[in-house]
Length: 168
Image (tube, rainbow, N blue to C red; front, side):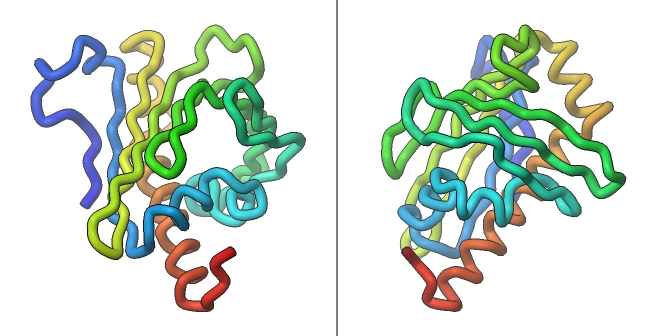
């Protein structure tokens, strides 16, 4: 089941700047976490349907960066930049995500990985600097649908790894 907002707006002082997307993935937490933290996996599933990703540089540790380009199905290239601000393996990843280092419109995301038997519930909470930037991301860029598709791609990718016995 996907969730796109808080059950109660009163739960958070930043609720009007948030997008929350969650999904249950039929794979163990450690594998789902690894798929988010290893560039060889990320390049296979990252982004909404029809997008591909080219990584310029990647290092997964606090303070390091992932510099990449997302290629849209219409041929548009989107420069992207992420720096990791917190890593608690295999439970939580926090990051700052923008178009480039120093982007004043960069947003914060926190991913949590909760085990549930043989499955994993992943939650992706994104907090934008302003309500207007959040609304623009939803209306102009389809952030909710794109986030749901991205987690769907992750789910399909890790299930394929499990089915093929290709866990690392």
